[in-house]
Each structure stands twice: as structure tokens, then as C-alpha cells.
Image (cartoon, rainbow, N blue to C red; front, side):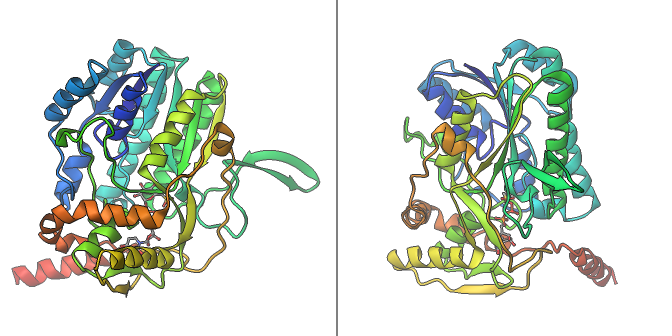
Length: 400
Ligand code: USQ
């Protein structure tokens, strides 16, 4: 299959490109390297060093043959995007080219607007480009479990049957996102659903839980194929952050009491699930929603899991509670469905205890690199915006 990945330089895009090439697919890759710039902007680095895009492309060609065609394109540039689709003629398009950070989107008006502009308008451009250039291609779009929020009822996959004043219908399940980033995904979902209805595009909207883990290329130990691994408070996600904190013996930063429940899946499963969805596309005109996760647990349970795994490696790390910078419920019901991927053949295969332990073992060579960026581990964005008042006061103090 000819599969175009928008966001090929990212945490999911780069391993997905390798995995699909190994399965014999022809891969197109779009990226504007925004993720690299944003992580540098927060003063951080990938814990595992990553090669430049040129080095990555050379390595890809050496190991997988001519199975990746790269387009340096920003999704906000409609003409360049449409040209890439016209040139590559994809049968499927995977859309991972979004700003993925909730804290970044809550930092201030510039970051909120940029997140929604980049994500919502970039996706809208992609929908138009697909309609005009590859209307029969399947769009696999990365959404998030965070679109649903934490309602006090079970969470279905996208839609639910509802009875209201004696009448019944199947309607989109209400979305209650928790950051301007998460809302950008909700807006995308609405636009994609609408595009499928009016233009007959087919799409899979993946409501994915929090991905964690290190991707090891099965093809080679060539470090130019290595994947990024973020640990800062804006672009690092919880398990990856906890593992990095553990190896430098920094207390595991649980926000609030840690009762908030979230769904998780290892990166290997994320790649396998996306591959399953690509190889089993929906019908023409169908808008399909998949909930994609392996298990769910509370943040405190997670911290205990990482602490246990660290102890096996002789690291005795503490768990510390931080005043929660986010506005989120800490004790709540949580019971999302996950049936459609199982029907397609998904079987979770990884034990989180073993996985976190092996993650920490792989991170130990990069301990000094993480230690050198210790300052990015602590959150500096508050959902109520108080960090902005604090920084204004500091600026006044400095100038006075
Ligand atoms: N948290 C802590 N301590 C930390 C960092 C986070 O307790 O040091 C808590 C947060 O308060 C939150 C939970 O852990 O309750 C998850 O935070 P996160 O930063 O790992 O994940 P989140 O902001 O929800 O976003 C991440 C990805 C995003 C993806 C989403 C899936 O950045 O791209 O869409 O996970 S989901 O959470 O299912 O919406």
C-alpha cells in the first residue's frame, strides 16, 4: 500500500514509517520539524539523541531501500500539501502532524492560538487536499482519549445510542476535553466526521491513550534510526517522564493526589494498532472511531509501578505530590470501551512492570543528559494562568 505519514519525524511517525516499510508498504513522509523546535524552545532535548532529518533519511534508505519519499511541508501551506498528495498518490494518509502538548497549549494566548491553528487548520487543509487529490484514500487520524474527558458513565467508541423524550438516535458521545490542545482534537473530529458525510471520504479517528516506551528498531541498531524520547513537563508524557525521573533519582512528580485515571499503551502496541487499522480500512464514506489503549490506571498506581520497577534496578526513588497545575478531577469513574480494535485482532502483549524496567535500563546510558536538563522536569504552566502573573511580577522585579 502507498501510505503517506504526516508527522513522519515525530515520536510515532518515525517508528511507524520503519514498521510499515518492513511490512512492504511504500511510505511517504511529510514534516516541518516543528516538534524539534518546540522541545528546544522549552529548553529540553530528547533523552535519547536523535539524528538530523537528512541523517534519518540516509539511514532509512540504507536499511529499507527506496521505501520512503520525504516532503518537507507544513500542513498550513495548502499548495505544498496538495502537491505532495498529487505526487505521492496515497492509498492511505496517517495524520500525526499536530502539536501534542496540553501544557504548551495552556501557556498563554500565543501558544493556545498556535496549537489550535496548527492542529485544526492543518487538519482542515489535509481534508481539502484529500478531497481534491486522493478522495479514495483512507485517513487515519490521531485523536485522543482525552477528548471524552472523565464522564460519570462508561465511554463508548465515538457514538452512543440515546433515548430522549421518547425518541432514540445514535449520536456522537459528548466531548469534555481538558485543555486547548485536547479541544483542538475535538474540533478535528467534528471536521473529519463532517467531511466524511459531505464528500464521502473514509476516516478512522483513533482515540489514543497515553503512549509510552522506547522504540527499538527491529531492523538495526543504527543510532540514526533511533526514536525521540521526551521527558520535559510540556512534551514528555507521564510514564516516560517518571522513568527519566527515576533514573536520576528525582522524586516522581504526581500531580495532586494522583487519583486521576488515564488509559495507556506501549509504543509497540500503538504502532501495531495503527497498522491493523490501515490494513483494515473502513468503508467508503465511513467515519470510524476506535478507542486505542491497553489498560487504564490511576497516576498514583502508575508512580508505584515505576517505583517498583526502579527498585529492581537498585534505584530507590520517592513519590512526591505536587499541587496540581491542571484543572482536572482527581477522583472519578472511568470505564472506556475498547472493542473495535480487539475485533480487528489487537491483543495487548506487554507487561508494564517489565516494560518500565527495560525502559529504565535503556535510559541509563543517557542519565547525564537527563540530569543536565533536570530543570525541565517541574511544571511551570498552570491551567489558571497564574504562571503568567508570576512571570510578569518577576519581569517587573528584574527591571526595577
Ligand atoms: N501528570 C502527573 N505528573 C506529571 C505529568 C502529568 O501527575 O509529571 C498527570 C496529569 O495531571 C494528567 C496525567 O498525568 O492527569 C497525564 O498527563 P500527560 O502529560 O502524560 O498526558 P496528557 O496531557 O493527557 O497528554 C498526553 C499527550 C497527548 C495525548 C494524551 C492522551 O501529550 O498528546 O493526546 O496524552 S490522553 O491523556 O488519553 O488524552
